[in-house]
Image 1 (cartoon, rainbow, N blue to C red):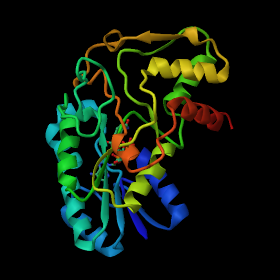
Image 2: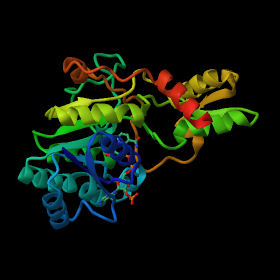
Image 3: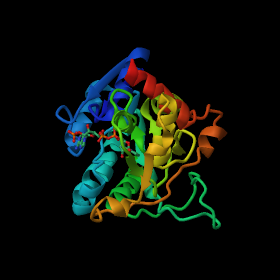
Image 4: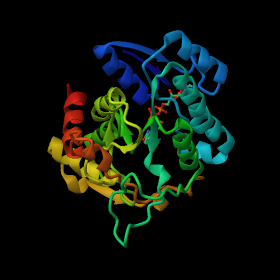
Length: 284
Ligand SMILES: NC(=O)c1ccc[n+]([C@@H]2O[C@H](COP(=O)([O-])OP(=O)(O)OC[C@H]3O[C@@H](n4cnc5c(N)ncnc54)[C@H](OP(=O)(O)O)[C@@H]3O)[C@@H](O)[C@H]2O)c1
């Protein structure tokens, strides 16, 4: 089975390439090797490699940039997905499209902030979310659309590393406290994503580490993991961090992994355990 990874230099693409290579043949194409907005180039690459799975790691993930240039957001995050879906269809490859919690607006369900299930109505607050939602549709009904949140790298410091650096100094460590989602560790996500690809699961599937949290909550978990004083972590509101950013963001965008559970997949571990593993990796 050949897995073709586009956007292979991104934080998710790199890990998909690494894990897929350990299981079989993988072709990773970064943006220089394949610009996914070029329909002819996508068709040519897919017909040359004839993959059985295509994982789309390519996206324009600069949320504020997307707000300022929604046409470009649509080109990369939606229309390019259509090119991939068409090319995948021509060689019977299964497409895995990665999407986002930003398709939701943060509003409660029946008056309560509970994680959104896959079938909850979408309502993006910003151009990035709108473009990713259009990308879900462009992926087509046969594709697996994996929605995830607040991705943390498998091969770099990410937020855990930044929090550790803050805790290594003295004084308070200020972290956002007024937005919550499910911090998700790419090392845990990728095996799930590849299993969904193997099973050619169609439709939207939420895949996140367990435990909705703000970055301030994660900061306290990191402090606990290294024996630092958790009261050094100070929760701040986004509004206190500077002038408003171009794009609005949902204050609540935790996802419920209903479909994964129904498929009989093991849920992703709690983010606390993933934080501990990341602390150990960064210390090693
Ligand atoms: N990061 C998060 O917190 C998060 C949360 C939820 C969902 N997601 C979704 O998860 C997926 C992976 O995100 P990520 O965090 O790995 O993003 P990332 O690190 O920003 O990687 C995206 C990659 O796409 C490449 N790319 C951009 N335009 C391209 C084009 N026209 N053709 C080919 N490649 C192109 C980028 O290349 P350049 O660097 O050269 O531009 C980059 O290597 C995305 O679909 C994203 O929407 C991310």
